[in-house]
Length: 244
Image (cartoon, rainbow, N blue to C red; front, side, top):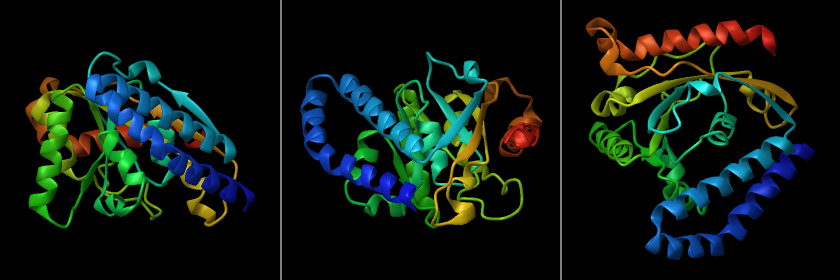
């Protein structure tokens, strides 16, 4: 339980001590928004790396060279743990917003940081509101900000490798033509979810697949883009299962 306590304590202190930092970054953003955004990104990435260190999480990264560094992309991945966000966000090379459940918007301080980092809150129960969120994500990509979404729509708590992918999750790539970067995250639930509330040492494999450009796919594959990307991630997960 000591790992849980230390990780929570660090996260709370970061959020509290970060209040004046947010104020300073807001002022900087009035003169140079990109500099402020990048500074905030690096601070949060540092905090996430500290949390992973406290939790004793070892990460093996495969295929990081597949992530385009000079263009915004849509990251997609399987989702079994809250730590999936911490693990993947800590490695984003550039500005990236995550699509999160709308309940996260009610969390004090955390939601303030998320909004500064171009994260979006989606209400999957309201189709009209969900569409507005996706349209904002499209605008972010057009403005050079990568986005990340977990197409299963929620954490997978079943024994299945993955839940079905929601096709609507891929509209941000379909409408902008940006690359889709598939991420296969293996063994992340072993950090917390498999033995909640204990946090244990775990070895997580994070593999980035080759970028998928929707406009370069044939018509049939484009029509079933979610299923195609799910197969790509499934292959990586099956390949990496023996490494943990």
